[in-house]
Structure formats: structure tokens, C-alpha cells
Image (cartoon, rainbow over all chains, first blue to last red; front, side):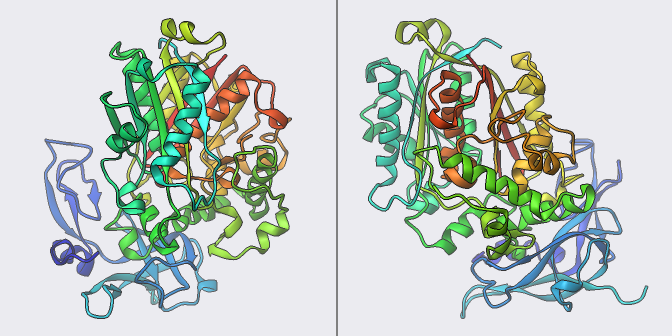
Length: 134
Length: 384
């Protein structure tokens, strides 16, 4: 990504799963947006904290990683549907790929996402792991 | 809508073309199309070029001007059109609209991509820019990864099998055997696909379209003007385009490409056609699951039945609706910006009866081009 402001302005959402909710129609946006697609100009967005709990909608194991992820491969990427209703693209960690399945309950954890080479920024954010007993 | 004529087509060989530069590719396909149409450079009113990422692949933006220059077409207006892998299809649509608006009579539309001048990692990264850079690619997601998520979910919801995915690839490699312009001339089996290395489970190497250099070009003309040049034009009778969310995670349902459904709806309505009227189609099989999503979204088969239809040979040459007679993106190759134009070239050859050993009997054909994981779709209907 190689840009401090570009990462910094999303930090709240990347670190704490802060999204937006339209007070008019109730639609939730994560990643956050500044415009409600349903209500358009009449929409009003407020911050909303996600619980970090959800379930796996689909998953894959990345074996040809992009630059910056070479040392993590193979790793599990998934679509996780949060209990609040939105989906996120995220890595699933602390589990072997064979154990991941559709419908699995997961929870968010704070982890290193990637780094800009040896001297660059280290980017942190959310990943998900199998949920502890709920 | 009023019809627009395709009066000439041209194509370069698709593949790893080390000796040919970005602009040479375009000029080669362009010269072939102009020859085919029997027009002079002075007959051309405008140029549209589909190109995804000249900037990242060959460090060259402003490619519309570069191409007009190297093709000897200055000072005509030249415009680049970009929508990731749907850039070519979108360029066709821009050409169609410029003629239907009455602005131009004869327009050249090309697509070009030079993908092998950079290392594979850079190519992978560039293709991932078709997804949401901040919330998909940043998280470690890749382009094959996104289609793998769709494939897994499709298998889960509809019982699509791993073997059925492989059969898409087997069929398209078989079709490419008869296409001299195709990147691959190698027959493969289901076992070959299932034994190829995993890229992003459940997708394997032989589920994925290759990295390709290539260009394609067509000459479009108003119906009145077309008669001055050719006796047998093929007509574009319908055009549709739709957008959807850039990120897969923002789609309500990931196993239906809503942009395809919406673009097809518009194209069918404009052409006054229905899915059952289509007799040959070139669809966006960047990954095997992509062809299954396409034939479902275009209405050739019911949602969820694409795998079964493939298994039963419905989409093979000789089947109910032959799909990707050219070999598709999988086996013909996928120079991203050129693909949408190359699809139109194939359907024109089929409708003219010039498709050689892969010829099918058809009067009505369709092209379907997708950008990203389904953020853009473009559909065209062509008729004799």
C-alpha cells in the first residue's frame, strides 16, 4: 500500500471494526462509507461498533500469494458474515485449513496484516479465528 | 435499438509474444480489421481502445494517443476505455453508442494488453487492482481467490462438482485446438485439471485463464454506411451494460453475478431477443466457475444448473448452445483489455461462416464480458 495517510485514515475500522449505520433505513456499512446507497441524500450515517462475531460464508486457501504475503502462504481467506449482517473479506487464523468449513462460527482478533518490505510500515488489523464457546 | 454493422475484424495471435510491443500488437490487429473491411484510413471517424492497465503492465498511460499515432490515424479522436477485464466489451459499446448518436459513421474499436513485460508477481498484483484495493487486496486476497470463494459457495448451494468445473476447461481446450489464434493447442482431461497445482482452493491452475499478450480489433459502421464497403455485415442488435459492487463481500448473493443478469436483460430487450434465441456465445471464463456463472446469469440454463449442463455437453460444439467456441479466455488466452473485442471477433467469424473446424450453425450470437469479480458486465447480441 506504501502510503501512511491511506492506512491511517482507516485505522479505526481496521483496528476496532467500526462501521457506519444509516439512522434512517438501518443499513450497515462495513467498511464504512459516507453515503447511504438506499437513502442517498436523505440518509444519515452514524458510527457503529461491530461485535466481531460471525460465521464463514465461503473460504479458500491462497497458495499463490501477492507481494507482501509470501511468508504467510498458504493461508485461509474467507467471507465472514458478521452477526450485524455485513460481510467482510478476512484471513482465518489459528486453525489448519482442513478444519475450516462453511457455517463455522468465528470471532475477530487483532493481528499483523502485512508489511512494506524490511524498512516500511507494518500494517495491523482484524483477522478471524474459530470462536470460543459462546 | 438501431443496428450497428461490424464490417471488419482482426486479431493477433494470443500468447507470450516476447518479440512484439504493446503498440505493435494493436497495429497488427487494426491493420487486419481495416483490410477485412476494405476501408481506407481516411474513412475512419474515431478510435476507441479497451485497455486495463497499460500503466502497470508497460508503464504507459495515454495509450489512446499512442495508438492513433502508431497506427497513422492522427488527428482522429482516440479514446481509451477501462473497466478492468471488461474494458474491451465496454470499448465496443462506446463505439456502438458513438455511431447510434449520429456523431460518427465509421469507428475502429480495439482492445490490447501486453502482460508479459513484467514479472508474474506484478501481473498478479495488477489483476488484483480490479478488486477493492483497500478491503480485499490489502487483506491478502487475490483474484483467483475471489472466484474460489464463489466456486466453493456455488458447490455448497447447488451441488456443483469439482469435476464439472474441470469440464469447462476440458471443453474450452478442445475448442481452442481448432483456433489458430489461441494461446494453447493442447487437449486436457478432467484428471489433468484435478492433478494441476492448487492456486486458491478449490481452483487449480487449469481452472484459471493464462497471462496473455494480444490485441483484437473491429470496424463498426452505421447500417447505411456499411453497405458502401461490404455485402455481408454482421449486425450488433443489442447492447447491455451494468455495474455492481466492486467488492464481493458487498454482494447480497455471491453465486449470481447480478451485473451479468442486468446487462443481459438490457441487451435482450434492445435486440428483442430471449436467451433461447442465442445459438452461440462467447462468455467470460477467466476461471472455470466464471463460465458456469455466465451461462446461468445469461439465462441459458437455470440458476444452479450450469455445472450439470456443462457435464451433459449442452455447451459443447454440437450441443444445445455452444459456448466459447474460440477456446474462451481459458484456452484462447486472456489479454484482459483485448478479450471483450476478441469475443466479438469470434462471434462475427461464426455468423459469417468463417470459423473453420470450430464452425457452428448460427444466425444469432452473444458476447459476455466481465470486469473484476462482477463489478461490471457487458453483453452484446450479434445477428447476420
